[in-house]
Amino acid sequence: MASSHPNKLFLHDHPVSSYAQKVRIALREKGIPFDHATPKGLGTGQRLPDLAEANPRLEVPALVIDDDFKIFDSKVILGYLEDEYPETPLLPKDPKQRAQARMIEEVVDTQYEAINWGYGEIAWCHRAEGELAEHLISQIKYQTLTLQAWLTVRLGNEPYFSGADFGFADLCVAPVLNRSVYYGFGPARDSALQAWHARISERESVRKTFAEMAEAAKWMEGGALARAFMEGSVARREYRDHRLEFMVKSGGIEIVMEGLRKGNIRFSWPDPAPV
Image (cartoon, rainbow, N blue to C red; front, side):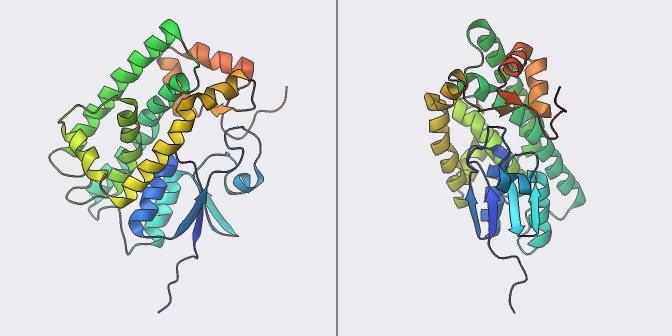
């Protein structure tokens, strides 16, 4: 019997985005054929026709199922993949375990992702130097440890957040925790969380996704992103909800104000009316 699934999917993507990474891991875990590419001009804040048609927020990931159906937001995409491809489930059957997986996703998609973003703004974009940079990095380390402790409790004595097998919660945690590992911010040596990271890194879906992230990060940390800001490029980094909250509560509000003055930060769609 022929499959009723859509033809090969297309993912608007960026190799470093934690949200796009978790979607790529899910697609690979489920064995779903897909093509993917980073939209040319992503991060400029300019209207990119192909991406805007799939996501008016101009964010990745956005998934093109066919000419008439396109979806965005990693949570929505993962939900669609679970519904459309139930033969390879990632969510557990038990309602409590499903709720726990979604709770973990919520925390790592908001609080944890924002901390990683904040470090990128300092280390890759050089938005802060001297005492301000030192203060923000100390905040990043402290808040990262807090979240890693929370995740350690969720992991417990199981090999995976999903229990005996790799699943939904694991692929959600993977990109954000791996960014901490990449930055050198834990988890602690010989900890359960470190062992979990080593364990998942051996999976083909995760290994390939992490390799894509590391390759793209070399370009970003090599100074290209910082030069784009210093040379007056149209690059505009998005300070969406939780990222803005992190900067303000952690003492970096002057970074936000300076970004507004220089026009190299943006907020999510819809844009405000012209003044």
